[in-house]
Length: 228
Image (cartoon, rainbow, N blue to C red):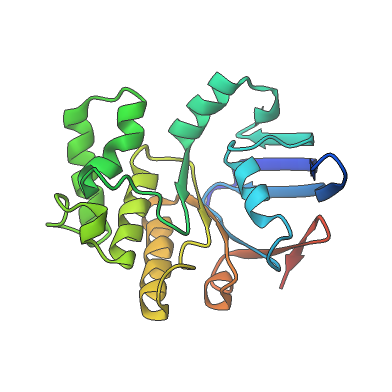
């Protein structure tokens, strides 16, 4: 495993206010992840795990603190710069797949590259290879509605990898799947980490997934701590 530090986060704060009450979700969080590591983020519902992941993924901004990705403080970037980094260097896998229903599996996988302006012919070949890698060879023409939940999540994982990102952030990636299918997706994520050395940070309630990660961290009371 590389010793290069991918994420370095210090004194991270985030709060939400409805005009009457302010809730501090993250309260001075420190966190670091090496390139190629797998990390599970656990904790009760509603403590801010998804918020934390969205800040790592540049989908949200912290209220205070430093968020460095490969040494660059993304908090200091403007929205255009953040969108570029998000598209090129970060892959996302969500609980509810977030596939575009009117497009085929192949087109869904290609989408981040098309948004980035990559050549469609090259993307098509890469997307086809990724669909084969996640066990969906021969299904590239099917639309999401023609696929099972597990197959849709495999498409989502292939889409997350299309830009060869430094890190994949997965938010409850098996939460909407039956246990057997969930285990298959868990193994797929671990296998892709082993073969591609892609850093993997997963928010999960599942003990079976969190215990096979390189590290487990728990979020509670706005603080993050290492777990055994």
